[in-house]
Length: 98
Image (cartoon, rainbow, N blue to C red; front, side, top):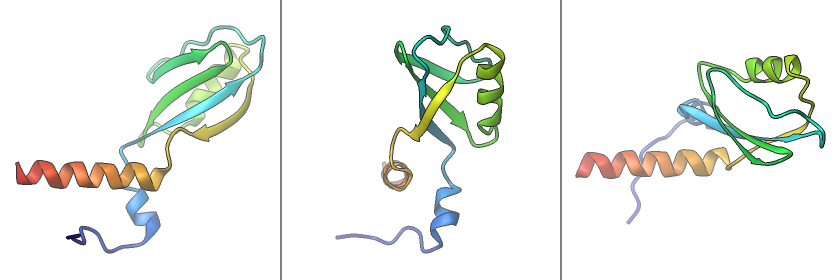
């Protein structure tokens, strides 16, 4: 049986996420990037995965990449934010019961 754990707007719900992971598609001949202050990994030669904490924002990622001559062709969220939030809320609720 389900239990209502939040009753608020979608914007308010999404603001509860502490971080988001973005997938950046890089130009084919981009140099190997280095990002200070972020958790990141190179998925393959032209795909970068970056975790951005809520208080960091993503502008610094683009500034650092631009300074290194790395061209970003596109960007997308790694996971659906509502799904990610749902999993987080369920895990928190289960932790309270343990």
